[in-house]
Length: 451
Ligand SMILES: Cc1cc2nc3c(=O)[nH]c(=O)nc-3n(C[C@H](O)[C@H](O)[C@H](O)COP(=O)(O)OP(=O)(O)OC[C@H]3O[C@@H](n4cnc5c(N)ncnc54)[C@H](O)[C@@H]3O)c2cc1C
Image (cartoon, rainbow, N blue to C red; front, side, top):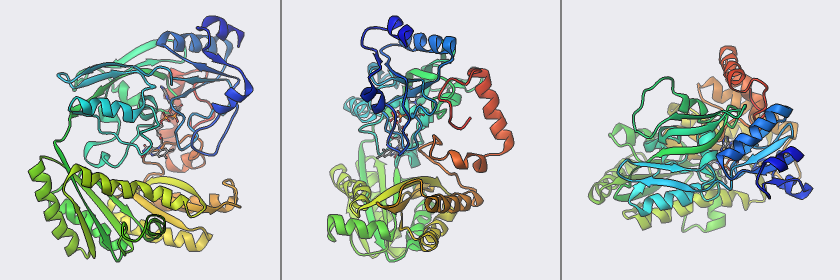
């Protein structure tokens, strides 16, 4: 570690045990102790770290803001945690080109606010956006509610500067909205969870900020009716910005935590947001009101302005806190199912609950089938308990049998590692292994993860 201290600017290397401990985990349960933490301030620092790591065969695990949900930045094999948190400059914000160049440590929400202040829009909106970094979003291909209409992080990444394991700096992609020069190398690094290279700069695509937003919230006596409403809205020709659904357990927790006046009676809740011109959004939610009522909704609340829409979202965002207020540990699984399986999923959650004895709460992005299935664990049961693993086994096996995915947003990291093999074919695993070998032959980048 002496070599690192000599080669990097003063104060960049943390060796104290308490400091190293702080960099050993994210928002999931796992922890591993790094031997050193480097706070990189430039691409040159990252190059120095990777050259030394290659020379001495030391593992390097990239870290953004450490708000991942799957233990992705946990340094499973020790070595160096390479934190990008100090690289947090917006290098360019060009609204004529619809492009921003940013360093990886920029916090997502602060970037979105800067872009919005110029009348422009960067849509990917993970719920953690006030805390997570753009570099972490790129490395996990993060998504959120608005991704129904606007897509996840990938379509907003035009170019990347990446430092490879041997210290080579590669600039892939570019700064134009279309570019078909060679392979899609940008796509290869987006979602790679720090296994193929360290992202040190991103060129992001911006689009004009929609002029208005409006929303509608509806409760239904049965989840099947809410799921049917999702399909009816699409069938009527709408592509809302977001469509969020919640189940009876979540609603009961929200009523208890927030009061009955904020969450009307019913066993399923649907929140729909549209954006565009002020007139169009108001007309759209009126038409949707008719659709929701025809599908059996017993209470509909219209939010015709941005402020009213935000008030609906505030309730939706408090669902998670309401569940936590029940005094149980929430294990959040971000599975995705084909939309035709939404009702089956909500029913299956009840089967899981009966079979394994843990309450299960489902809510999330119904529009794209990405539902957060929360297994609620009593505090006296540890998260590694085999009963939890069995419940997760059942959940993932069923989701895969429907043609779904074990993770729609959070990534594999350590949390989903036990199901990586089940979720992929031998040919796909071999392809991952070949790519990894080509880019990181000594396996130094984020070892102990899915490749
Ligand atoms: C309360 C809560 C809500 C969440 N909601 C959502 C949500 O709605 N949608 C969603 O998609 N996710 C969500 N997440 C998960 C998480 O916030 C995202 O995965 C986010 O993108 C992580 O960013 P980060 O900066 O914290 O990354 P970290 O946790 O620091 O790292 C995540 C992964 O990226 C790698 N990495 C980080 N920076 C780089 C880099 N510069 N170069 C190469 N690799 C790098 C790390 O090695 C690791 O594998 C949520 C998490 C929490 C705690």
